[in-house]
Length: 135
Image 1 (cartoon, helix red, strand yellow):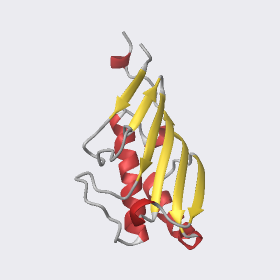
Image 2 (cartoon, rainbow, N blue to C red; image 1 turned 90 degrees about the vertical axis):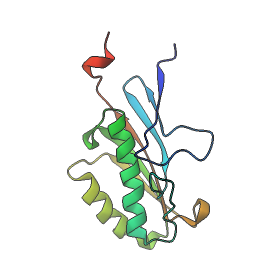
Image 3 (cartoon, rainbow, N blue to C red; image 1 turned 135 degrees about the vertical axis):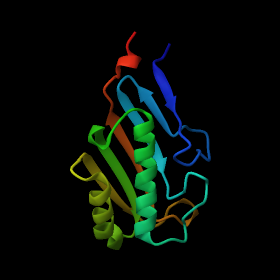
Image 4 (cartoon, one colour; image 1 turned 180 degrees about the vertical axis):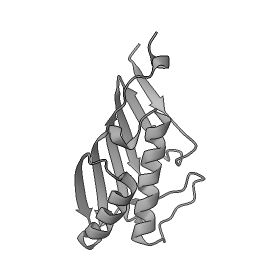
């Protein structure tokens, strides 16, 4: 047994390609890139940057919570944002959504993202094993 567990939730959009929302390897959770798409699949590609950033972060957090983690378990976040001018707004949304948690982070300004989205975010977390995980 590989010990790798697929993490999927209906609280975030279903993957549109050949991947899972996240993969748990031991206590390490690897969250796939999350776009500003509602859990019901409705894209927010025409919405303002702030709305898109909130949705992408909320998708990431929903997956984290499904795996048994909290925002405090995040150790690494990478955000791809269209336009360096959106960086200060991203910082505001990110700080508001993550609160006191301050994982290591990289923000990468890019010229464009798939389907015209303005932000994509992925993450790594270390989630402590719950009592139901030990046998």
